[in-house]
Amino acid sequence: MKTKLYLLSSLAVVVMLLSSCATRKDLLYLQDMEETKEYPVVQKYEAIIHRDDKLSIVVSCKNPELALPFNMPGQGGYSVDPAGNITTTPAVSGGDSKNKPGYLVDVNGDIDFPILGKLHVEGLSRNQLTNMIKKMITDRELLKEPIVMVDFLNFKFTVLGEVGGVGTYEVSGDRINLLEALAMAGDLTPQSRLDRIGVIREYGNKRRITWHDIRSKDIFTSPCYYLQQNDIIYVQPTAAKAQELDQRKSYIYSTILSCITTITSLIFLFLK
Image 1: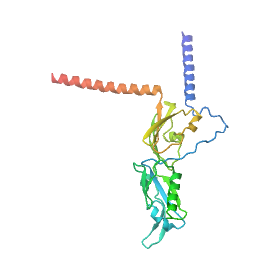
Image 2 (image 1 turned 30 degrees about the vertical axis):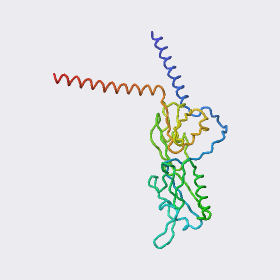
Image 3 (image 1 turned 135 degrees about the vertical axis):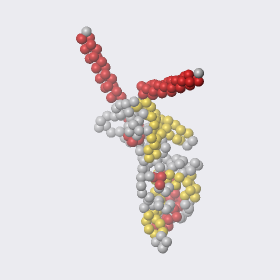
Image 4 (image 1 turned 90 degrees about the vertical axis):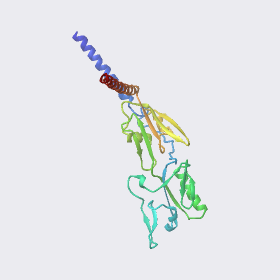
């Protein structure tokens, strides 16, 4: 009898170890990348301007006083005191980009820019907008050799699903990839499906989801490897986790139903 129990216990331990090894293997990222092998970076990243983006646009030139009309106060550039003296003004400091002055892209994809008027910027990259403003200023002979700097002030993305910390995250600048975004959200959990990591992205008036398998190096060639403004990352839970959530919901619903039934019975007894 003791021998049978010993054998059964040993078999159970072996099964647990094997399942543990399989679980750890399933959690490995980029399993098909070979050590010391070089993989070319074939993707050129450019963040695209969308509606509701907040942009910092600073114009300067060799003669600072001539660039004054093109800049917002406090945005960085130049200012004139009551005596007519020109001084350099630093940009508003602080981590909260919402307090920094900038141009908000409206629902039509436009901004109102000093002197140049309404500009349609939706769908452009930073470089394209920079070159467009430079060309308009030069063609109208408003400034000679203008210098234009464009930056995002509210670049953000959202992470949902089976991660360490769901939420919306803001980043400085406009360059962040999918792996960095998952790290900011507390990384994946043992209940995450590594082959079902979706990125929901807006394309004009439409949305599209692209699924990724983080165990494969193919993630580097995905058009969603580098995030765009307002991307939503969704990490799907494993079947076991989903079943656990369903059971938890069923338990909550049954508990509420039981409480309602009990209260109803007590009311009937009280009214008799």
